[in-house]
Amino acid sequence: MKRNIIAIGGGKIMVPAHREAQTLLIDQAIVQQVKRKSPKVLFIPTASEDNEEYCDAFRKQYEDRLGCSVQELLLYRDRPSNRKIQMLIAQSDIIYVGGGNTLRMMNLWRQLGVDKYLDKARKRGAVLCGLSAGSICWFRQGNSDSRKFKDETNKTLIKVTGLNYADVLMCPHYDVEKHRQPALKAMMKKTRGVAVALENCAALHIKDDKYRILASKKYKKAYLIYWKRGEYVKQTLKPSDNFQSLAELTNN
Image 1 (cartoon, helix red, strand yellow):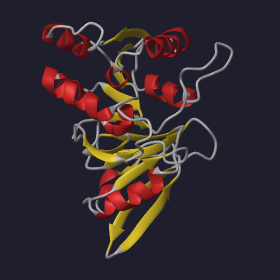
Image 2 (cartoon, helix red, strand yellow):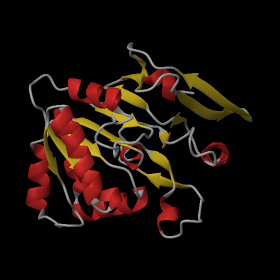
Image 3 (cartoon, one colour):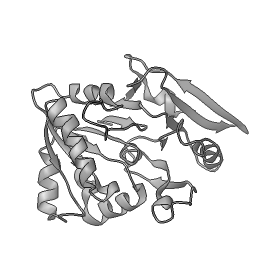
């Protein structure tokens, strides 16, 4: 399958002006995937309901610091026509999806046909990336905290169906949200295949049929997780410049 996905486990991009975003090195790797000056980047903040502060922080990072040309696809604030949605996605080199409520985002995308336009972008070779909800969306399923957006005390984690560009259940924030670890263990006992759990400032980069782990901070990593013959397997995936076979990752 043709794809170029960089899924980030978490990390702050909204930081004071004198500080750098926690994901800077991963953001640089995203931009480097496009072999031309000033790549066109589309920011999709659906999961945060088009949070204006988030949009401003993203523009400062990708436009002011990394030299890209940034546009936003605002499905809550503007509710653009299908023609405009299709045009914005079609003309972008990089499509970055922000964090927030994954379930609500996926439901709205499917209502508006955004999922179909994103698949066309994948097929033409656009870089597909994002953080938290923006990492889950590209995969078969994700370990999501979408319920907390209705009730802040509800820490129940649910499976959300993504776009299925890789046969993986994605789990972000694996190190900083401690309830994720036992919840993912229980979730995977009833789920086929494998999960990839990403710590904040770690990312899974899938390029066609290969993968590697990226990190923007030292000691950050990912984990391959699955059940096999009644045993819970948790395998560390360390950052590397070298790509490995994705099939070897998913066929466990």
